[in-house]
Length: 432
Image 1: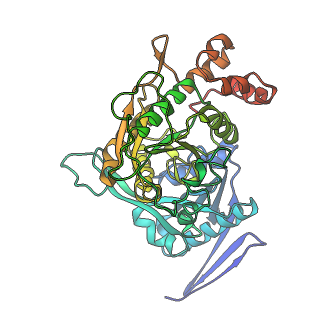
Image 2: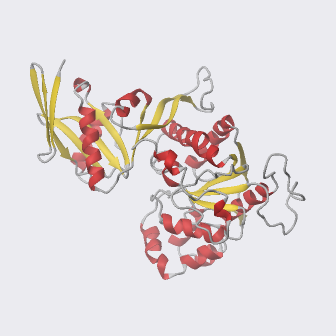
Image 3: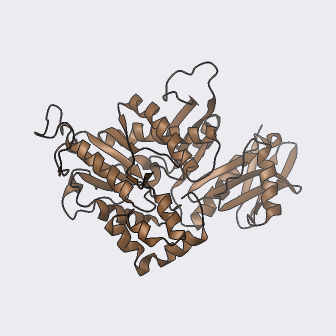
């Protein structure tokens, strides 16, 4: 059957002429702050077994005769919540919705787009110019990616992460801030992403943190990772003398052994801005000479790779997101930096982070990456956490806060620069 369609952007209207019939479709943007308009989109998505995520910033609907027959949304640089009425499948409406979202992103100055979807929709979006970042396939909780599922296990739908333009992850991994060259004092430790060292770096260790804000608990975890990494062979068969076994009193991590790559989550979805979090981590770890601090970028616990970290998703959705994020780490990031170990702190408070850590234990060994969990640093019998610091800020218990954060964070919190952030923390009580 032959299709002839014309896209009229100025009139915000699409006409698709089809043999024997003509359909008129009209695009409308949705006022998400109006309950009545938002509910119409939510009801339509529910017929497609989808929901409207709370982080969407822009939503458009495609209507004919006043009826919604398609919709799509934009959350930052992520296209999501795209659906078409089953009665209009095959009318290329998905193409039109994606084009509308791409135009909106362009007007917002966004050029790099992500799309998180079910595996069954992969070819549709690849035909629209999106390239594959990772495909998790059909997964079962507690089973490594690529592993066999067991009878009676709860399965999550296969999911894929796509991006446009294609191949951006490979460019991100080739940024000039290579791991070895970043180790010099005063060097710019990271720009937008890590790069594979052309001199084939020795085995390294990785940490991923949000640090909202950077606490003594974070500092302890980084310090322990640095000490353990320093006692590892820096090259195959090469063992730094005197660095095996438990740390001796006063032992300070040096530049021998493994390098520790510390990735600070880049997503701007935390109460402390990304530039502040990154700076406090740099300042708080500058004495650890084998630690390199990187911006996490768009491929490590981001709104694209692990949106459940920032949203209250179901257990099944969170599992799917976690596994995709970890697969990207195992397949793409770890080989580029020769990461052989990933270290995490115990998570007694946040159920999403705890679930992520459990999946890490199952998935990363599949890629030859050891996972080590380190007990959290305690103060007054409780684990030190960023959420506790934020709670104390709301309660204005500054004497207690001073015992939970390093000097660099304390200096920031007591400066005029932090005034707006502190006011925001007092107003908003949320997970991050």
